[in-house]
Image (cartoon, rainbow over all chains, first blue to last red; front, side, top):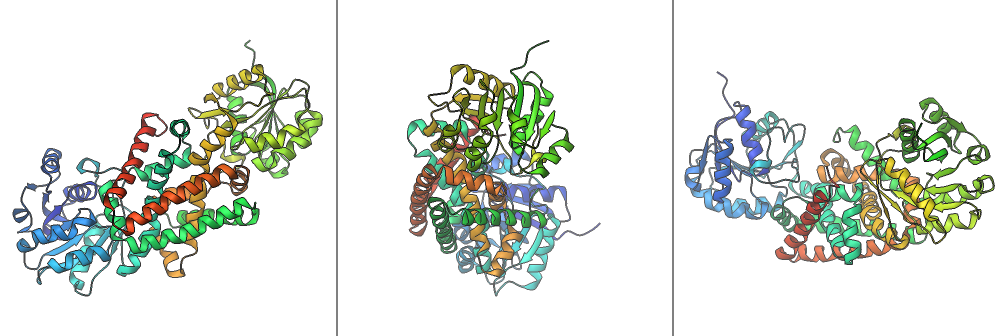
Length: 296
Length: 296
């Protein structure tokens, strides 16, 4: 009998990400021998029970975490601190606390004040997801061949980093250690800003005169459809991401706006060279992504 | 023997769109009994010959169009006028000239001055495409279940509209007659602006400091990948679209920029309600698209 990385893993917030973790563990018991799910929404708890993807579903935080050697916070980044405060008194000595939030500086700042001294926190960001949410949206292969970024704090032990690294690699992810601020900046441009833009353009379309608006829906070509796929993601999660990584996002939006204005000027003045160059850069980046195997 | 809509169809510019038309006719001879392809690039002509998707490949405009009862311009919108000027002297009396350009007001303005009085022009926009280009990129089902918009001028005869409508419906498209200016405005928001934004964000990413830039490629999450798919489209085609529909595009970009600034302000001031509302509108539009069956 091979031993598992963790004995008892508790997932707090079994939504798209959390339920995918549970499903993966159910398939691969070398990740954990026992899983517990907890959510403050009874409907979510009931649904997880029906789906039978956790060994145990708890309705109170104390029972959920008290025997766990690993607790995974898979809740919107805006409530990470509050949830940690709630569970902190019951965390086992020596337990690892980790999270799956898309922003790291703000999550660390929210969690650390509540952290008991004998619990190690490993800030983690699995870069995976779909436009769907909730326990039904998860699936066991969600993290396969996707990046999982780990952003240790000065208090994170090497032993805990190693365990979480092994855990995510067994989930199918490629892991990398990243500086906290650097993580937030990179994610602002590759993920947060594209989502902000997608939400915004849907609003721009929605605010057009009635006649045009109804036709926008009729004739939505591939460009707009791709944008709206991104735009159909979970509102609470993204609201929290925007607010919690606001400095990096506002910086990237400012840069993008400058570039968009430069493009507008080139279009107005028919600067063919500038426009062509801009488009060609897009193609080069696309090619790099394909070379990096980030694109199917 | 059933008769075909046209006897001899000439496709000028057998790229993604043009070669897809040729392939479809090859499969369904009720569209046309004979097809001719012409391109001013000899490499494209040779490739079309190798692919055997046209009954005849011509290397001069006169031979290409002189016996055709339908000539389809599938070239970038910026050269529609020039190409029409080149072929105009050889167009058959009573022939239908049509195009596949993504902008309509500018294409009509470019073509009409060169149009012989006994040739009818039917401005047409099949809303289909992929991020690939050239004769190899085409396929016979490209237009299936996609919109084909027809924007007649005061000189377009009802008979010619009916023939082109029948032609595109047999190609598998849903057709609709649209006002010229209205077409350009709707396409600016559903297609042109999303492409402009996608090209721009790739440039913003490309201009980041070296360290961040290389990681952008490593960690490009789904949001950015969807954008770059759009951004890998043909540079010449899109440069021409931007310049030729610049009024509508600049108007839509201005509206979008206002909305983005409002979102930036909401993020800076943590206006949760505004942010959530913006995201939820995106989801509603997405839902409408699914209801309209524009999304798989």
